[in-house]
Amino acid sequence: MVSFLKNERGSIMLEFAVCGILFIGFVMGMVVMGLWMYNTSQVKQAARIAALNVAVTDDPAEAREKALGYLNKTLIACPVKDTLAFGDRDNGYGAAEAQMNPLFPGFLKLVDPQGGSKVSGRILIRKEAVAARAHRFRPENRPSYN
Image (cartoon, rainbow, N blue to C red; front, side, top):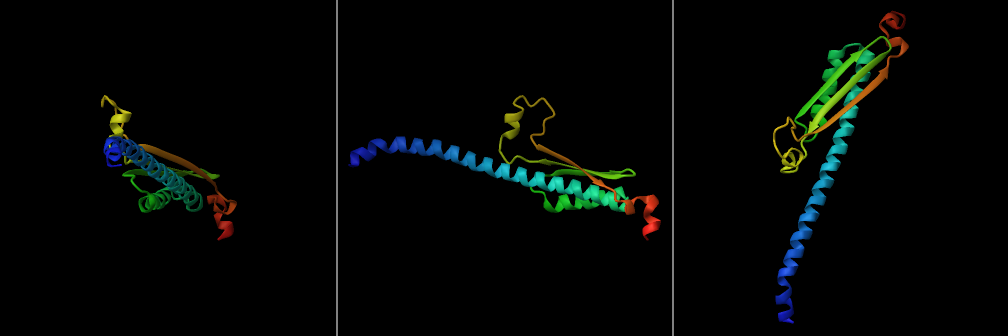
């Protein structure tokens, strides 16, 4: 019995090493996908906030600041983020963008092995939203409702 275990010790260690690396890679992939899905949802919500606020208040600067404040509070592993808000007579428009760190060591080498391009290794998330300006929120109709 002892000689049987002695002969199998190297193969068990090798099997554990291969399976361990695959398992850790799979778990890290699941974590990164979950973060990506969460951050995508938050960027979309920030675009909605910007569009709604510019449709209601007709102040793009305030709408942009509210959306950027939301992104600053909710995003995870996204060092670069920005928002845009503008409106016309009928609609308010909002856009939000974030760049997420992939959390994989060596990801930049995998994406850009030569290192010559301007690839940052970050995952770009960009979403846009439109909010219809209600009749009472249009600038020419506001005196009728106030």
